[in-house]
Length: 400
Image 1 (cartoon, rainbow, N blue to C red):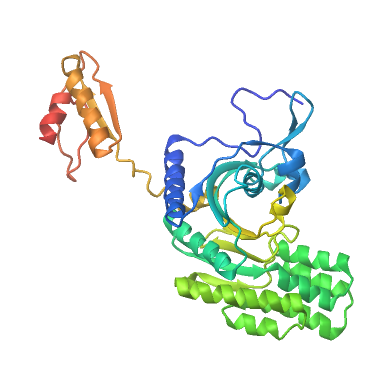
Image 2 (image 1 turned 90 degrees about the vertical axis):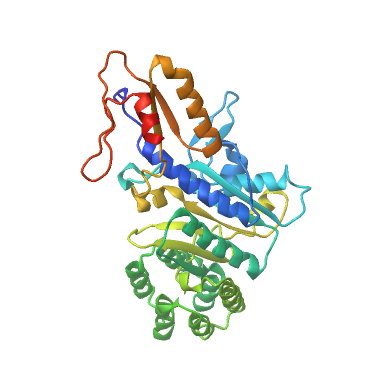
């Protein structure tokens, strides 16, 4: 293996230059302020966690964890998500805090990705966790807040797809009783959004024609409230019917929020079926093939930390939102440049301090090079100004 050169970075990580950082921070600030207005308090957890606690509890597969040993030989991990660390805190430091607990976060997380996949190994998430409320209202609150946060981030055209792992778990057990391996294969196809592979798997399973027809019918369960009625006619399984009922209740609460225009029911969406226990959702923005947010209910996680509690939440994929918005707002900082000479240094610095303090302006000060020629500010044909060879006195005169 060749030694990396001084300018090289590991695969999957990147430098964020000043203009990009300004846009990233603007998204982060707007979203966190939105979450705070909904009653969520921000929390910060360590970048490093123990593998045997947070690492094992995480929804991230073991092969995607960044592992390292401390000086005592204990295995550590770089956090791969924020949900497991927050569950640890809720069950320990906040164990005497009454439920429900509403927490918000913004952090970088790390996942070891295959280099050929071309995906980030370090990325940013901004999200919330609502712990201690098992109701459909709590799930609806998570979805409605996700919508508000996407709008606060500047995303204008998007849809939220709602699913429920209980529906597929119940339906597949009813149609393929005891055939766990076959059920897992079909779930994996749906998780990967591989509908061609799903149909092929059904053919390979050599099912009864009516069973194959009904399982293929799952792929058409996408739409509005009518999907609840259609799904209820596909099964008599108690788990599946309870899932449909819960999802319909979430839909009704979202109608009260007035956000249904952004939402559709998609019962092919299962989320991580080893992690989520109920409703799941993903947010897709126009012109971007990857989800910009995802979330759902995970009622079993807190049990692993000794404080059994229902929980729901979501995370915005801040990097993808940044990519989606592109370079919009690059000039939003409105930076002011004050040039001064030695004789006017005190006045210039005092003026800069006033503008920063009273007006919240971003102000840069720079001493004018001695001996350099100066001339008055001259407007361009379009009415703008080119600032060159200008003294501090000229700027003050122009500003009045």
